[in-house]
Each structure stands twice: as structure tokens, then as C-alpha cells.
Image (cartoon, rainbow, N blue to C red):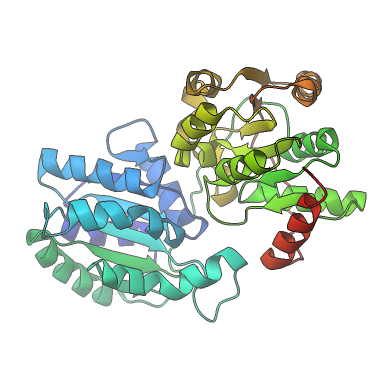
Amino acid sequence: MQIEQFIRNLTAVTGEDPLFTGVPDSLLRPLCDYLVNRYGTDGARHIVAANEGNAVAIAAGYHLATGKVPVVYMQNSGEGNIINPVASLLNERVYAIPVLFIVGWRGEPGVHDEPQHIYQGMVTLRLLEDLEVCAMVLEKDTSEEKLSAFLAEAAKRAAEGKSSAIVVKKGALEYADKAVYGNANTMVREKVIGMVAEAAGSDPVVSTTGKASRELFEIRESRKEGHGKDFLTVGSMGHSSSIALGIALEKPHTRIWCIDGDGAALMHLGAMAVIGARKPQNLVHIVINNGAHETVGGMPTSAAKIDLCKIAEGCGYEKILRAESYDGLAAALNEAKKSKKLTFLEVFCNLASRADLGRPTTTARENKERFMEHLKTKR
């Protein structure tokens, strides 16, 4: 279905020019591109949220101010982040605030996908049902009549303070006019990660979900170094730094490196406060900031407009470093290796990545077991 046709039908529930807020998803790339092209990311009609729960709360505020039904878009992995606000804020037994959800269905049963999406895909519709969110599945051949009929019922539900969802299968939405994303940074993330891996040596590395972990895997492959030193956080976006903290506290004499992304860091920013409060002197937290959700299409994050270094300092990180060039990064990594203080390093890079970038060829459980064996050699 063409995105313009899809959006036109949504107005039966939302009215004209509703609020769209959410977290980008590759399956929803046509929707994300349309929203950026039509509304941008700085106005009142479209807000890229830090996480999906954040989007639900923004949507609730919009409803309180206007009485209208907002749209929250997300990958199905974000269902976990919306459970609390949907159950304790939106539900008709509480405030009865209606929302129309657009959910990308990664890990759809019977469709090959990455390991982090398999179980999530299995329970996607069940979770919505448990949350009393009535859902329909949008497929490539779904007719406009079927969508229109569902939305007519969704409008009735909205009038009663109830929420509905459209679960979008891969390829169900189409949009030809892709949005163009970019920044003025010069460094390439894959080279940055290669430099971090070299600086880390035999130290354990925890890397965030998405292309960062895929690039780290391929760097190890190309160098024939094996993968035992790395924990590739293939799911759980925003939690890599917390995983690294848990390791660092148990291995106080081993330096732990965390490769994070700006979108991931923003998703659960409170983790930095917890890390800063504990101040593990053996943790180096690196945020590679390209100001975008590049792995799922490049839609901007808020990180390009804030100062993550000041946030880290305010959270209690003791050594703050910043790199905008390869020479600057080399110097910062050298400082981080010598540091005996909790260290934060922000690295600015562009949105470039290889078109032929592969995916890990080992399973998630194999990665875990090899990493744990490596940790046994550390103290």
C-alpha cells in the first residue's frame, strides 16, 4: 500500500495532521521517510522519541491538550518499553487515553530474521492482545477496504478511550521519495570501531545493537582474532552500558570497554546516572554519535542537539573525552587506556556504512559462552 493512501485512511481515527511520535524501524522506513519529508523532525507534528514509552507519554500529552488521537510508531521490539504506560496510563480503567499504534513486525513467524527478533516476533500480537490493544495485520495485498473497516472500528474504540494497532509486515508499505540524512562529520564508524578494538587489546568489549556489533564482528574476522573478547548486544537497545557496568563491577582489575551509539544511549539515558554514581574506575564508555538511528534508516536522534559530554560529567563520570578526527580519537583512546577513572568518550562520525556489511555467523548463545570463557581469564 502506498504510504499516502495509508496516511489518508488513518485520518478516520486521528483527524487531519495528527501528532506522529515514535522510534524508527527499518520495516517502517516508508512511514519514517514520509514523516520527515512532510513534517521534518523539529515541529509539533512529528517527534522522534528517546524510546517507545517516551513516545506514549508524549502522545498522552497531545491527547490531553487536543482531545485528538495521536499515532505512535515503533518496531515490535519496542512493545516492552510501552507496557507500563499503556497499562497504567492509557488503559480505559485509568485515564482512557486512546492511541493508534503502527508496529513493524520483525521476526514474523515463518520469515527469516535475526535471533533477537525471533521470540519478539512470536509474541507481538499476543502482547497487544494482553494490553487490550485491538490489532490488525497489514500485508502487501491488504485492501484499502479492509484497512478502512478496521479504522472505522478503531475510531469507535478511540471514542471509548481504547487504543488500536496496525502491525505492519515487511514490504506492506511503499514510498518512493526517500528522505536524505547526513551530517558534516568526517569519521566512519567502522574505522572508529577498529581503532577502539585495537586500543582495547585483550580487554573485554561490550558493543551495542545494530551495525556497530556487525562491524565489530567483521573487524575481528578480517584480523583473524576470534570473537571471545566481545559481547555483541544484538538486541536490548540502550542496555549495553548497563551490561558493561555489571561486568566491570565483578572484574574490577580488568578494563571494560563499551561501544555505544547515540540513539541507544538516549533510549535509556538513566543508565549513565547509575554508572556515574557507582564510578567503576575500569569502565570506558564510548558513545559513537552520528546523530541518527542509522541502522534502521538514518532518521535523526536528539543527540546532535545536546551535549552528551556535559550529561556524562553531570552524571559523575570522572574523565571526559571527545574526538572529532582520527588523530583526536587516537589520542583519546591512549588517554582512556591509561586512565584509572570512570571514562566517557564521545566520538563524532558520519552515517556511512558498507553496503555489503555482513552479520555475525555465530549464534547469540555461542557468543555468550565464548565471552564468558574469556572473562574467566580476567579478574
